[in-house]
Image 1: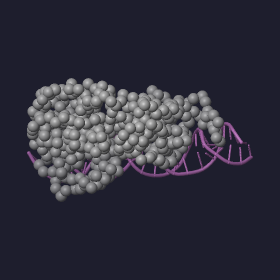
Image 2: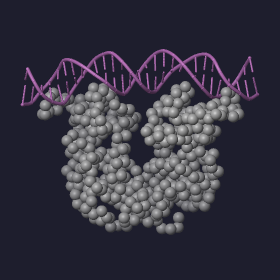
Image 3: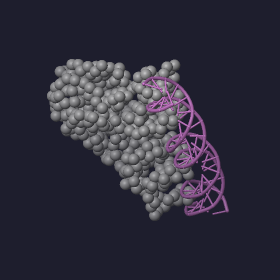
Image 4: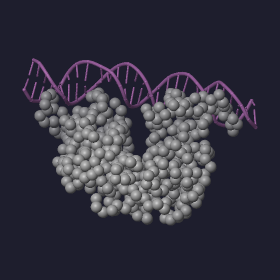
Length: 228
Length: 228
DNA sequence: CCAAAAGTGTTACCAATACACCCATGA
DNA sequence: TCATGGGTGTATTGGTAACACTTTTGG
């Protein structure tokens, strides 16, 4: 390898958020600098020389949207020769989950704006970021079949119906209420809270639960079989 | 991002091969240049400025071992700040499968030597290549549960027992012969050849099959459920 | 005819599915 | 007391898992 290599490395993050009203959303930022100035894009940027990928992502999420995240997973690396007009730029993409209600979005130094955007209403995006989001969605939808999902997305206390609606959103189809409850309970992952859902719009107030975090992490490792 | 970025990008490949006598092996090359000179390592190297990751891998496999491969899949990107003594070097790792009997290994320009090494007899490896191989093994072992495996690893014509032994090797445990046959046949993936295994060491000669490639690719897409 | 590996069918069990009625609350 | 959503049990079914004998060949 005698010829100098001119390749730059960015990290980009697909951060999914879920709220009962909004459904599944992705965190987007509006670019403030060329290329693709003023277009919506994934949060991310060039990784520093002495910084790990994950640290780079966390820094960018903080700088560009005021979001902090502790669960991040590598998604894929995108290296098409022409994917960036500035020259050869490789993107190491990560994905993660957060509960949007834990943050007040704040576009800071590097971004013009930041928003949660429903995954079925994505705008035209910069670079190949649309492709990256689609891949992350596939990954997430596969993931819920063998790992528990919900802890990162829901409030501390939630009803089984809320968890079920999250799964229905992700699976894109209805699930049987009774079978869902049986399944979830069979994992011993929920701790009942001595508390009921306040002010239901109508009907009987739901029992609230929290995740047994120890058990949740166990199940992440040992895997679940979730098929309804 | 005002400070110049000094990060270089390599591609590395974990190429698995399988033979009935040797079992699962990984393709390794002996390094000819520092760092880690004369240590065993994964085939790979710096990606060229105008070359895709896959093309880079294929070029390096050809240069370093005389192996060509058509099935390659991205594994993970390794970016620890200290993983390479030359400075910050990111490795985009791929993995793939080949039938070793299709190639005569030939260390060419960039490597001192090349070999197939049983996965349970790995030598001390350069960089973090041991970690990369372990991750590839996990991926491969997970993969066989939801995609068919074998076409890339076995000879054109093979017996069901050979395919079964491949699965037993990958799963690391014995599999019931009858249930395995039922399962495999239920996928309609095998085409019987009007030919029996010649010169069996002992016992009744086995019926030979080939893969129905069209069906094989279909199953790769639609997925299988393989759990025995 | 003996040894070795290939080929084949049935039963038991568990887990996923489908399905309907009662309960608690607010208005 | 009515409307709304929450909570629960059972019967059926389909697929996985366990299991043993017969067949074909070479020596």
